[in-house]
Image (cartoon, rainbow, N blue to C red; front, side):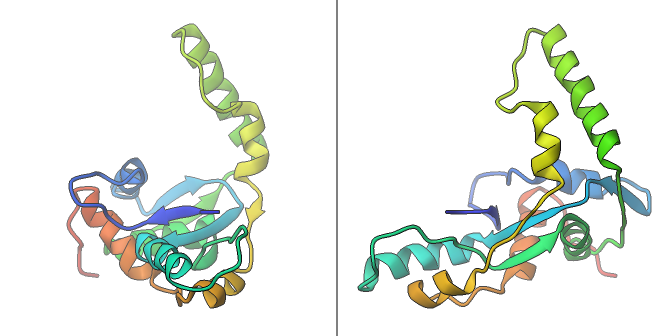
Length: 165
């Protein structure tokens, strides 16, 4: 089981490129929801796969992760990896529901359909979907903890240069 993945694949832009672009807006703050998630580097995903293939590991489901971060902590660290300083302002849930509802109507008017129920997404987006990554790290033989480098790679892969603070 994989949470949000960070890093860079040669020849491909990260899925996080729009968020990196948002962080580069010339304002000192960003708006985002409360909540958070587990996160992992692409390097540790690869190490977990190698660990699962090369060891006598029980068949089962493993939650692969490096760290649990709130959205505010994540955005501050991602901005910091780009050499930016941003204050994260958490939006009230009702504002998020209103925005997702308006987007749902906009999609309907354009004849488009989202892969997600945008009005239900608020509940997931504002939750803290955390887990303990240590059991999988120990069983599969990876250490976790290299998100800082993965965030820098995500910024670079998004087409931005790292700024010095």
